[in-house]
Length: 477
Ligand code: AMP
Ligand code: ZN
Image (cartoon, rainbow, N blue to C red; front, side, top):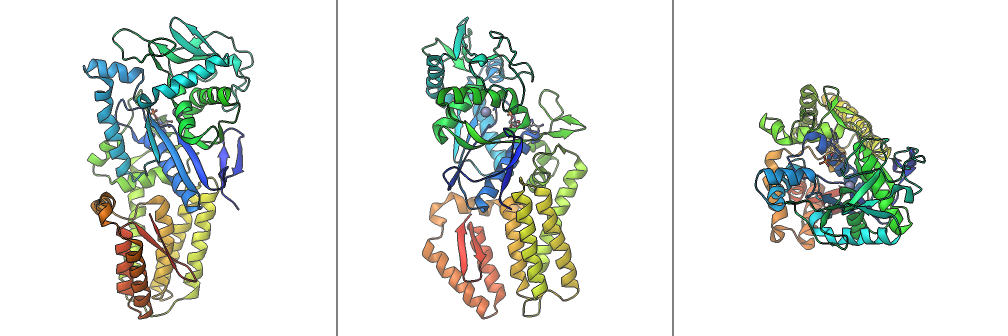
């Protein structure tokens, strides 16, 4: 079965391939940097990381843009309270967000784009909407008139045909069913930051930010737009109305939305005060890998109920896999390869892939890995696992870890950063090929310890080896 995603727009599972047959162009709504992100926010970002990694595993290139909302009502109010400019105020939280993202091993999107650095693009988008007759102004603000867009409601599957024209809102977030003309450009208020524009002094609304930046970096029709379910309405509905009014083309082919993280049966949110930041949990002694595992282990369209027992169980699961890895590489084994164990590893990878292809069903993918580990532990106990089955096990764990990325303990982070920070430290192709050859010779000579050492050393430098029937392939992580 091919890779399928559930598309909120069509409410169906649909086969995915990028429009150009090569590169998936993805836009995700990033953080509003007015505070530390909580782990509910990070559930959404972890799902997006898993999405990226699985698309790559399936051979697609990635062009992913994520915005950073660094101007909004809360930011302006909080900065004013602290006597800071919005730049000063948001700089710390932006830095904190990317530190947290790195602890959770979230890959950095190809384009991380700040709202305040793209005001001209937003102004031009509003000008285009005005030229098409989709806007009106009132008391110095400019609004999008939703009656001008017949498709309004198609993402959230609401019937807004009877809406009153002219009822409008200035706030960025509002309740479902409460369809109103939304603000594109907010009139300047005294003592607030502002930008000049053809519609007067002011600042952009939140929705236009994403439409303008998504189209600037990724073109008029995206392959995938993703975010948390709370963004379906009004935010994503409004993004569609704006973008499609400008281009008359579909704004995104796929819309993927991740469910909330709950705590004690309530959505974790800053306004309810029932949240933990990543830092809170790290300070309590939990590992970032356990948190990442917990966030990734529940399929993204299911609610995830956060509990400390769940977090402990996540840590235990990682430990089980690390123990298996250590057992396989640390046990003296008889030469040879047991075909049954080899077949079991191929079966595990097939099941893992099937799970992930099925709308990123991480629970099914994990089940495949754990069933394999259980079977191989028994095989090891009973002498049905030999020297060359090590490679079968390594391959299963490698496939698992290129998505879940939890096997390397966080203590090893400095190695990872070291490898990334210095371009000079990176190996050249010739050097890598030389190591690959040396490893092949070591294997031939049955010096598996040296072969393992070379594989591990290359992995530390970000080079992944893949043993295929014909030859050994390598790629940079
Ligand atoms: P924000 O920084 O509030 O704009 O939110 C960033 C992302 O986190 C959005 O995609 C939200 O949908 C998502 N989000 C917010 N609260 C939760 C939660 N409790 N569980 C999962 N995702 C959430
Ligand atoms: Zn957005």
